[in-house]
Each structure stands twice: as C-alpha cells, then as structure tokens.
Image 1 (cartoon, rainbow, N blue to C red):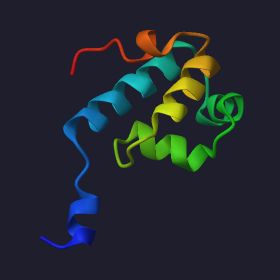
Image 2 (tube, rainbow, N blue to C red):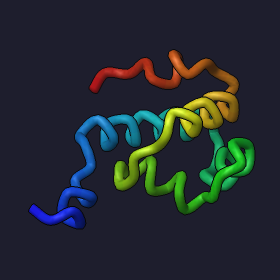
Image 3 (cartoon, rainbow, N blue to C red):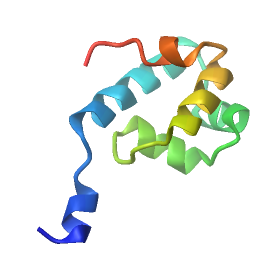
Image 4 (cartoon, rainbow, N blue to C red):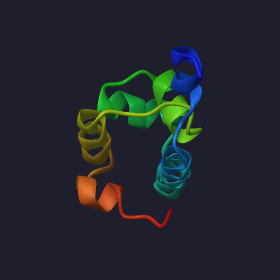
Length: 80
C-alpha cells in the first residue's frame, strides 16, 4: 500500500465524530460558517471534519469546544 493510499484511510472514529459534530452544530442552530468563524477555522475544513473526511489535531478540538462553549471532554462525549 502506497503512502498516498494510506493517507486516504480515515478511521471510522473520525466519521462518527463528524456526525456528532454536525448534530451538535444543528442542535445549537448554528451554521458551518458561524462555528468556523468562532473557532477561527476555514468553513471548508469544518465541512470535511463533519463528513469524516479529515482528521483533526487536538488543538482543533479545543478550538471547536470553545466555539460551542463546552469542554473538550463534552465535545468528545459520544457513542461511536
């Protein structure tokens, strides 16, 4: 398997977290653009996170948690 093929493999956890992230955003009646702005990230990247197409760094988890006004523990509290 080439390095490029491995890079395309996204863990199932990322897909489930993305679903959770989107549900949290919708539950709070926020657009992708609003959360992206609050977190200081690009809306396209947030979309990729929600679709489970991109992994994120721990620092991004913190920024997203802050944007939602919750802790990182609360952000990660979902069943996968």
